[in-house]
Image (tube, rainbow, N blue to C red; front, top):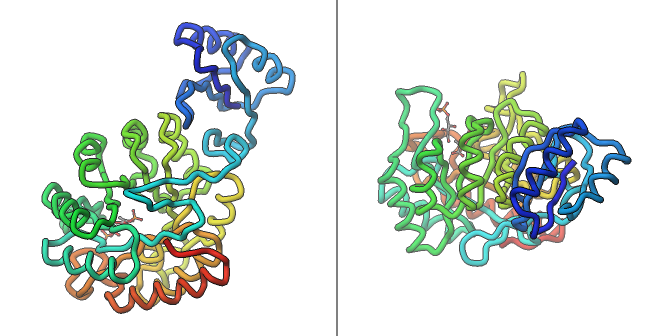
Length: 340
Ligand code: E4P
Ligand code: PEP
């Protein structure tokens, strides 16, 4: 259940309402909804009688009973799909399909410059690139960090493309936010709750990847941490989950797209690069994602994949990327959606 308080309800009255609910056995967590009003959210369901009683309490604007465990991410609470505006005029979750593309890792000024040119020319609306890389091995390339962020800023200024880049730690959010239009929270950090809360407080759009073995419910509950801070700008990214099948790096869960869209108002994009882990699978997975109703893609591109310092096997070359976008436009035409 979500109790939205009236704007005029002050903190003292809000605490009073929370105490009244608690004494009736309904424990709540305080937060803020997208419009800036205070909310009290309960984990447990309430009876129809209780919700009628709560609705009548002074200071309460509305009460929404949502099924399942998620609350602010639920389409019952917010029936209209959330649109997230990034940079100047790129909208994720609107009618347009948005392609974000770039190198898995920012490796050098020259590498980022050539890839950024290739993806801008090829039809990307957002530039991706990791300055901080969450690697399985501590001996693998960990990213250029601060220097990588500065290179992303340079390319944002030059190309005009908004930037999405991963942030690994709460302490870095303020710095990363200066160089990024979207904070990426990676699969490995999907359940890093302090990071989610801090990203929520930043107010910046957050691209939240699905954890390697996360259920849809766990994924939405992770998004809930961001929304509870009053930040509605969350873009979910399906990037494949662990399965028993070894022929792909992860198994892309295409069903998650319609499943999430049915229960949640948040936009969903797909990463066909990290899921398949192979460049030859990117095109079919990307086209399938567009046909299944995804709102966009996050694609790894490198002008010389053999030299890539991270995830070389899954990077598309510049011509492959341009060809993918052309094919995408044909699929998008069939599902009545323009490319942004
Ligand atoms: C990349 O973007 C991730 O850091 C990468 O997929 C990690 O994989 P690895 O460190 O196992 O190579
Ligand atoms: C990435 O997109 O750079 C990345 C690290 O992906 P994931 O978190 O999905 O592994």
